[in-house]
Image (cartoon, rainbow, N blue to C red):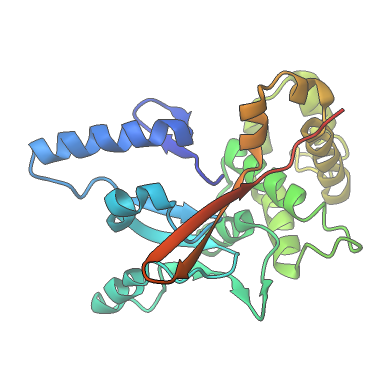
Length: 251
């Protein structure tokens, strides 16, 4: 979900390429109204805003939800929280002792849904499916050999399977029938083992589908799993060097 936001007014997903123009348009409108408070950013699955956005958008970051090593940025978030008397940190970075405390950032989102679900309400089917799919991929379906999953991830998977409104799921009929196969009651609640395994294998196989990779340009293929790293060296002046890494499927 990192780099994706929802625009309620247009009911569509906006991706990273769209965000700069969206923010600038909103900021221009707000400046005309002497109001610049409507533009806010939450960092998901990373805890430092990208360097080319640092100067213009760093002050717009209001929250961090992540499970990677803390890069030490945006500490003013906690200062603002303490000034308001709120004890809850706005920098939720689940990483300690050189390891992630959860296998997926989507587990942290599921935990928030769980903690706020005091009336036992059903979760929107699209949201439940997105969160469940990412957790399964990130943890390799809780494979013990991979050791990527934690008890918190397992709890999140079970919560999403049991509390999502699967009746509202809009999918191709054939795919939906396979997804719901093996229900453990009469209201289309998927069986944990059957459904989780099928969904994980479906997403995994799609991820490694050679026809999909063949359809991409070299640039788009590299962008899918691109990770950017920065190192800073100090001699007579401070110099920041950036480099990127990515993985692609090659036939």
